[in-house]
Length: 177
Image 1 (cartoon, one colour):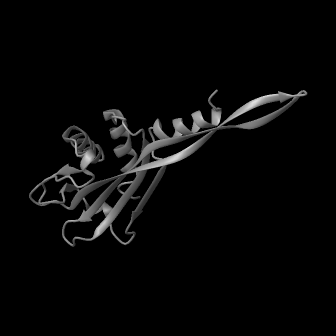
Image 2 (spheres, one colour):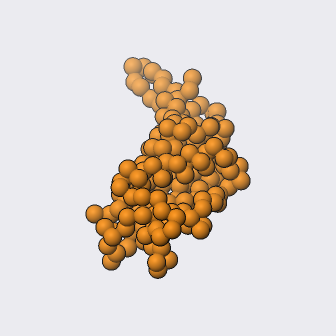
């Protein structure tokens, strides 16, 4: 019998759609209302930097498109000639593992107790981080950064819906008020 705790841990690790950890930081001395146009960091041409096993054109393109759509929904316009700010994203993915112990519920003389089984399972997962940077095009200063962490199963194909949610969450506090 699998333990409820083991099941909960696995579900929390590999099936959540939201970031487990989300941080945003920005320069408070900058006026973000002056920014209206953007393009990608590398000469306004998107280039992928991240782990090779995630370098799948479809996945990268989904994230790139989600970033553009989210910025456009916020009223920013993509402009390769004279952008106000540059956008870059990075993906960091690391294989991780944890040990999960199984427990059983036994009834001894009318009393309830949790008893550990001798069996322990090694659970493998991927810790994936999405970092989105906003850089001032004139000064090259990093103006804003979002950093989010999600967990995935080792062979899990990340859905387009999940990627769009991740990007929307990552850019939810841009521009800062």
